[in-house]
Every structure is written in C-alpha cells, then in structure tokens.
Image (cartoon, rainbow, N blue to C red; front, side, top):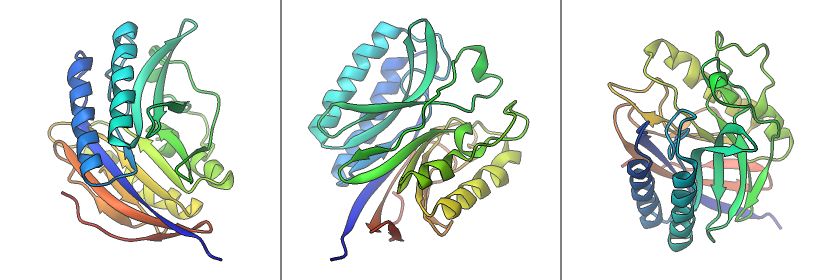
Length: 258
C-alpha cells in the first residue's frame, strides 16, 4: 500500500538583534504561536536567531532562553529548528538546534561552510546528519552550507544538499542571515531551485529580516525548483504551506503567505 503523509511547514523571517537575546526570544515565540495556530508541524527560524550573529553572546542566558523555547515547543506541539550560537569545550559554534514537539532536543547541526567572517569567531561543524521526527526525514543547513557563495573563502563545494538527499532527507531546513546586497539575489535564489531539483527534495528557508530588504527570500521551494510559497524580502514575514510525501516522491501543494 502506498503511504502518503502531509506535513505543514512554517518559515519565519525575523529580525535578529545582535545585543538583545530576550528580544530575539520574543520574536521566535511569536512565530511559534503563529505556527501552532496554523497547525504547523515544523517551524524554521533564521541563522543565529536567538543569540545574534556573533560569538559574544551570554552563554548562561542562551541556555536559560533555550530551556524556555523547549517548553514553548512542547506547549505548542511544534518541532522548531532554531538558529543559535553555542559554546562547548572552549569552541564557539553557529548552529541550528532541533527541538521536538515534546520539548526535547532532537539534535543540532553546526555550520560547516564558514565564511571568512564566520571563521573569526566560529569553529566549523564536522558532522552532516539526517534527523527523523514525526516520520519525516530531514536535514539542516545554515546559509553558506547550501550555496557556498564564491568569494567567501570556501575552497570547494561539497554539495551538502545532495549528500543529505542521498542519505534519505526529504526536506532541508535552511537557516539564513545573508544580508542586503541585492547583487546576490539571482545567485542565492537560483541555487535554492537548483539544489532542490538536484536532490528532489523540499527546501524551507528562513532569512533574517533586514532593512531595506534581504537578498534571498524566505519560503519553501519544491522538488521541481519552484516556490510553493515565498515571502516578501522586506521586514518580518511568516508563511506556512503543506507538503505531501509518498514513498520518497514529493508532491507539492500550494498555500498563500500571510
């Protein structure tokens, strides 16, 4: 018997304050409330959404706020992929923390393809994982992990999206903090389409809001390389869409952004 299951995926384009972790938590919790109200199964947030995009965050406060996020995920019954820094054994990492709908931490992904700026404060991740939650197999990538932008100091493109697809990932949750330079829009967005088509998977991308506008839209790209849903590049945005998966075959359905 063919088995098909539909998942509802939410993306949150949020402002990331470099100094105020508590303010960042408020933004994530608001997005979590919206995701729960829409019946979402998964929510993805921007890169370093909780701690700010740097290595100078307060580790104790980060842990306190992460515990609050775990409790909120359990109350909302939503699995959240949260961008946050962490510090372990004297090294700082740029990570995505996967918090299950029961409030437990499923795992984490540390950014592997660091830019020159990242390398001033962050150690590279070394492990690529496929996570499983609610019956969905998915991978996590952070910003340059996916598109390996030329000029960022990465010597080669390991095609991490394709590696995850080969390992069975059906969706990739992509947390981004890419900035405002409009020259990168064609490169970033065409790469989302290319990598989704190559891997025959969905990519759910959440960028950090910027003024006047970000250089890669937030939204969900289907296995055909087309946007199922795409947010405006300007300001805070939230979008939700359904994806249906049947025996590894991804069948997109469409829903309009809010």
